[in-house]
Figure: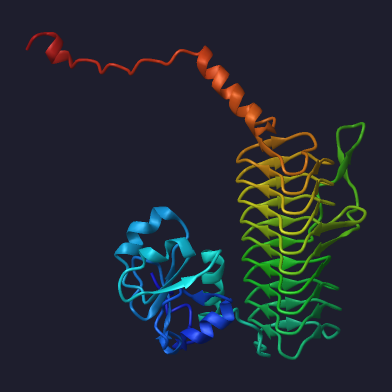
Length: 358
């Protein structure tokens, strides 16, 4: 399906030559000489695309959809070019999904601020707001905050005192950020909470809890994205640091003083306890959790619902709770299944009337 014009205004039509230049892709050998002059209006999925739209083929399981597609051009790998239906142009790429993303962005570029200020926004007198930043209705900018060029604060967004937003940040509705410094092009989705007090306290002899002052901050690197209703606590003494390009899904909890490297991926409902270190490109699947004060090595992958209680070496795949190397976990599961005989399918009880011979 193509982008919904009600919500996503497009820039088009655009000539194929422009799209190829912007995405770094090229047409397959033998394409018509005038193909670059052909105009396209947008992008769409294989099954729904029309002759003036571009689609892509990433996996072989979609070959049947390609065969019946009416798309005017398809981004695919060179080895799949022979599958292109008649009248369709083959755009060759070693990474079709990535190339398609670049093309889609040419039709639907990321919005940037243009200097709009809603009359109902509350901007502190000491805040420094770039002239081209947009501030929506009921958005709040605290004392001494700095809002960089091209930023967008959607309605009801809250930027606390002293917070710094780099160029091109987007703070969606009802997201809040305090005690934090954000790099360039950071995105906070609706309801995200950045910089709130961490879960730090000390018990007393009489069974009460004394909250320890949380005196650190949060540092979000360039191009970090934080999903809806996700939380990143500020450091207790020091900073919570989220590395450049890291993607945090909805409903993720990141505790105080956690540090992630660049390009980490944390999927929905992941929980990371305080002072844990994730090196570059760590991936954690849904509902995985990590105890505090451990290190997960670069490129490690933690499976869904895994519970990590010890350090994880670089490049390792871990599963289970407690988490262990994936191969070991799968061997143990297989061993247990061999010990437990498979139960026979339950036999449905006969109706009472049938048992009485009626």
